[in-house]
Length: 263
Image 1 (cartoon, rainbow, N blue to C red):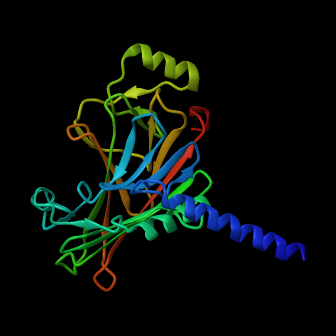
Image 2: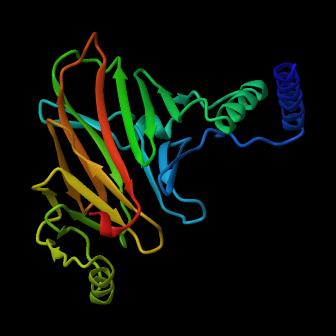
């Protein structure tokens, strides 16, 4: 009997919540998931890692992600396609679908994902385990079925500390902030600013910003290399991919650390 009462109460609560949502102007993107001290959610431009009210977004987007074939680098969605708005996403939902997404987010029944449609199909899916985030990008109808280089591009901010496992620092940081970093972390960074584009010698790149809590650790998996481009302010993770049935699949591993002391 208690089980029946609990079930009826849950159904009633669900009905009330659903009805209340009809009177609310729902945001287009409702599926937000925590990853350690940060959150991840889909937006019109891609899948973003962020903290509320901090104004810093680290976005994976087909506008920036790319492939390299025969030495030619091409964005997954080109500037011409962007200017002509010759693409759409699966975020365009009716009210019932938006309510369903809200319920899934509230009860944590799903993790954020997004799909883009042009002449190509591009999707970003996530798996989350505590402070660890795994992102899978799939690209089909690329117009090629041969091995090529696929690349993730993650933007960084001019005031981000960008450093690797060997404590090489790849962004310009004023001495005062460097001294504060050393005081907090008990680590001394070595500036490496001679080159605007560089492939780092380790498998992990860290992003730390004094305006945010936690540290983003981007970890290259087997076959991946990490490049820093200070011209464009992008971290690029490249990997040679052989398609499976015409689909190129690339994975990205990110961990959100609580503090600099965990490095």
